[in-house]
Length: 367
Image (cartoon, rainbow, N blue to C red; front, top):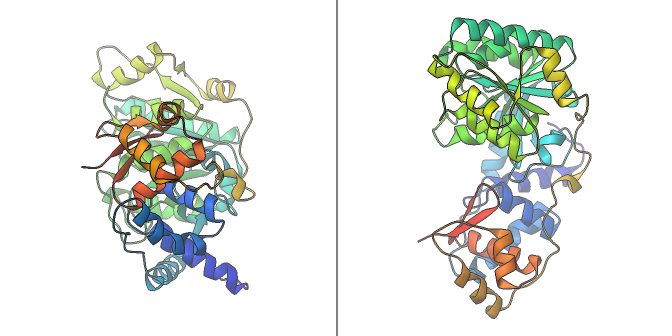
């Protein structure tokens, strides 16, 4: 983590302060960095923008907190990967709402290879577990890295099968927190021979709201997602639908209609997912494209150019918002305002604690 350039170190600390500040999620962070150029300038601007949004400014994360996190991560033998910089995964950086920072432990070179996500039921059948382990090993032999979520069942089998060739585990809590407990040895092995990624700081335990975000990261890392056994309303299907939203391939292993654990996969196939029987099917579906890393900050600067909004602009846009989430594109169309103005007003409202962002580029008013 050491860096000879004190300005780079200062900017890293400011970046962490920005990310760990309440109300500043991945989308807001990206817009702030796009508008102000550096995290230091963005931090300075937050109080005034919140005031214009009609609310109190969030309490900024302190420099001491950021420095403590840097030290804790380094002690664990891990490092921060900031979106758009260094080794941050290129495919994930293309995703709207991708984490502003990841904490990584293990082989960073795996981020340069094409990856396939593999997910499925926690209470998977013995046959599905055997199939997942074998498929992961075959994908590794073909040069793919297998990414999964270190959960029980299919995730565990996928990591085990791909461990020798290369596997990435995305955890729902801090990188030093083991969940489920029985995977302690596997998580340690992946940290030494594969790569473990976490969105949250060390010491943070997995919470229910963390798992959908973890699923989005898994889907965003990969060229495609393979589902091996899943119930119709499982988290595995959330991962698959995220992959579809990102324009990645969705693949599923068919199962018996008499087994409830196969219903999700069969449903995906009926909806257009590619039926998978072996590693050759996966390779054919995704092709040998992708991989690599983000070279600079341009990969995530998708916000329109900076623009100041007038009182009339804020009034017009706020009048279109309500408790029901609406697409930002629809707000731009209905308001007749330039995209830059709309994004500025939404940013002000969010920093003021009056706006909530939703998946799919939607937003709603709070309260």
